Amino acid sequence: MKKKNGRELDLAGLTDDNGRPESLGAFDVLLQPPAVDLINAAEAASEGLSGSQLLFAVPQAGRTGWYFEPTVSALIEGGWKPVKAAQSKRGLLSEFRALAGQNIDQDAAVLEFARRWGPLWVCCQQDHVDCFWSWAGSRQGLRGRYGDPPCRWMTAERVADFVLRARQVDALLEAAIQLRQQPPSIVTADLWGRILLHSDAEPEARAIEYARQDYTFQKDRIAYCLSMMLNTYGAPSIWVEWEDDDPLDLFISSGFGFLRSAWLQLAQLLANKMGGMYTCYACQRLHPRKRRPKAGQKSFCPECGPAAARKVWDIENRSSTGNQYKTSPAFDIAKGKTKRTPRGHSRGTSKK
Figure 1 (tube, one colour):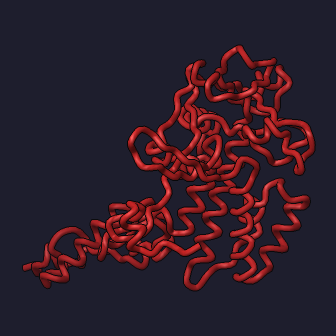
Figure 2: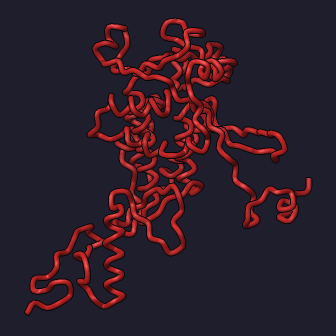
């Protein structure tokens, strides 16, 4: 079949203003629960559960004890609200990574997160390892992967599982940043351990082995691990919609739940399809951005932030006017420290 040339694509309305093929839109199946309650570890233990739990409100129909057979129609009728695709990308990845922080109240932080983004949808079928509920897994019983038992979902999910997955995503991003530095840094066994989790038969030994390898091997493993995240059962797929007189639309569907959306956003970020990775002008470390900076615009990481940007602006403006101490104290970009005004000087004038 002869490929369409740029002119034919343009006439067909399939290109953007620059004549490039339009990118796919997002079609995420995210549902916001009407209520989420926290069950502390002691209360959970009395119910035969391990660790603090989040309890999601679901309709009685379709519920058997702790278990529930999810359907979008039943959940919506029970008060769950669909999150629009345009909203689903706002803050998800950064908010999820924040759960990986060491100095946070995990129960409170995860509860607040789940009230906005919903459950992990962890599959609790005993024979399913490292699995997340999906319609395909429920209907087909994951034949060819796990056998006949279908996916199952519990209305209670462990707080620790949210933190564990957040640390996995955060560690993979940090590892990718280290490997993209110039010169690159070898990924440590600690980072590999958080990336591999329990999906490997011997994660600790494997992490030590990976940490001893060179950059080429580690880059390949990072790409492989991210691919495995994306290709869990119920992985991203292409979705088509055609409504009224509008043109037929193509979407990339990340699948069911926020975790698959976070994995897809991480992949897009590292592939420079969603802002990309940029070097901080102040500290020279790579950092992710949701949007590409404008031409000639400097990029600053969250740690340096607006304060560094203002001080850099001050330095450049003072340099252009020849007045070294015109306004605020100078900023040592390399060390990230403020330089005090030299003694005997004040706003560029000598002390008399």
